[in-house]
Length: 174
Image 1 (cartoon, rainbow, N blue to C red):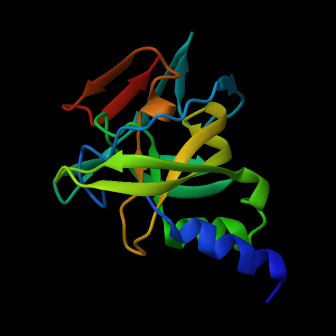
Image 2: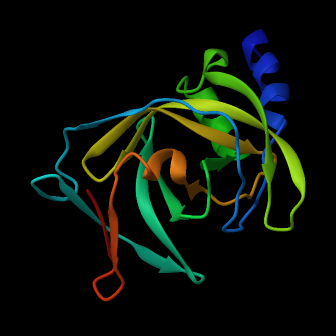
């Protein structure tokens, strides 16, 4: 096992807040991000991007690509930051998509129960939603192998306006 792998595991195991709630935390870490576009996977009209959402177990999920890896994230406007489990963080690390340089530090999070937890903040190089690519987006790593993936405000606020059409099962990002 490479030494760098041994160094990152303890850092990734220090975690953040909620493992499935809609209030996955407040944080005090901020990072500027930028949006670029370049793919044909979604409908695009002027500055709009529409993606299909799927209702699974009462929550809406959307397809998201993190550093080139396709995943399904819960669309969670109550989450302050993108949240991934330790399982996804370790997978991204093993694939060379997450490095020690991507670990920003620690922050405190408040979960749905009101409990405060210390979390590890990382930077995802790219987060792709539809045909939009967000770069250098902060996320938290949850110390729970089965924690759901939450797409939170650290990504959603980059769009400005988001519309949800429950009848059509679509989310439009502007």
